Image (cartoon, rainbow, N blue to C red; front, side, top):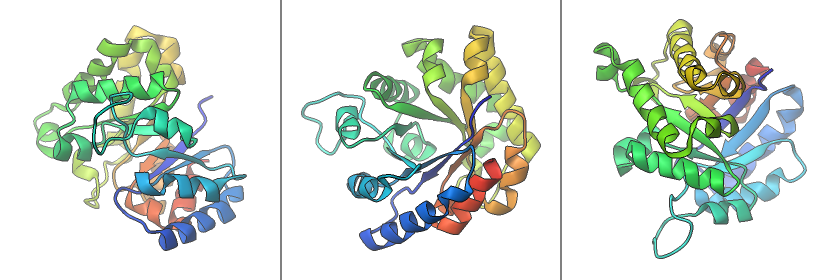
Length: 250
């Protein structure tokens, strides 16, 4: 039985004051969430502070990215060792914004995946297609290419100790959401693709859906067979909304 995971990606949002209010709201209501793993991913500069606020709670924290290098002259980068040192348990890799805005290729994403996992942090691997790719029937080919780059570098067994997040790029921050059936179809494809290499890994790996998930649509999305939770963007910045999504996952 795969335990649902709901992860909040705060992106480049937050301040000490707003983070404090948000975390207090999440922690105060986290007891309402049963049998769901809850994760928040603040901006790098706030992770340590958020960690202190979460101390003693059941809420996990992670990062929105990680360097592919372990140490050295890489100005502005944050290594897995640094993240591990402050207690991070997860790191998002390959988010569509990193791919589109910062040039993270499939190979770079695979290297970041490997760096995170080798350093003892569980990667949350984001995959997903552009609108034009969906409209031209390339969704499965794009997702397969993104997965294959990781498997080529680290092997299929590495996916067991990771999370995959399917995020159709056309549904991120646009208000558009893949229908539950559209999302399930891609999740089923991902699990089937992994299963061809290793059925046991496919059964264990959690596959999240991301793309304008809200409390209003979360229950229907999460009721699909192969959807094991969500990677939540904007809706993770409001405690009540985020916890309601977590409750839907349970």
